[in-house]
Amino acid sequence: MIVHRILAVAAAVFFVAAVGIATFGAETMSLGQALDLIAPDLLNRLPAWFGDWAWASLARPLMVRPAWMIPLGFGMILGGLSASLSNRKTTRRSHRRS
Image (cartoon, rainbow, N blue to C red; front, side):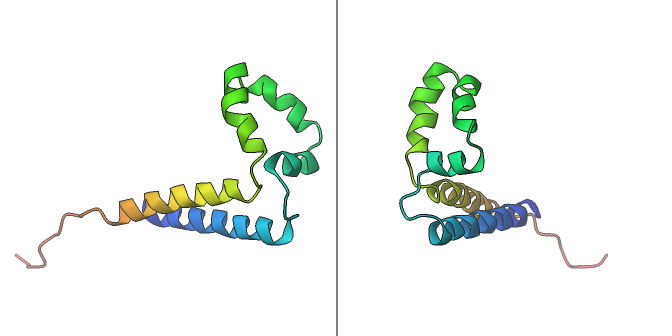
């Protein structure tokens, strides 16, 4: 099954991104600060994309977390999906020739 290999590669990319951000980024840089460096007006536009509840309950708490935590979380999720897909039992075909 090739899907678990794609998920494993994507997980590795996110892990490398997290290590790169943690290593080369500022030690206390939050996700909000990182997004502000990338696109200064993005944080002003983000609340309009989310609803009031989603911005206050989901997005704003993520903005104060360290910037490396987001790719690390995605890497862990994709790595877990890859591991669970690779451990599935496959149907075995008989090697006998008729």
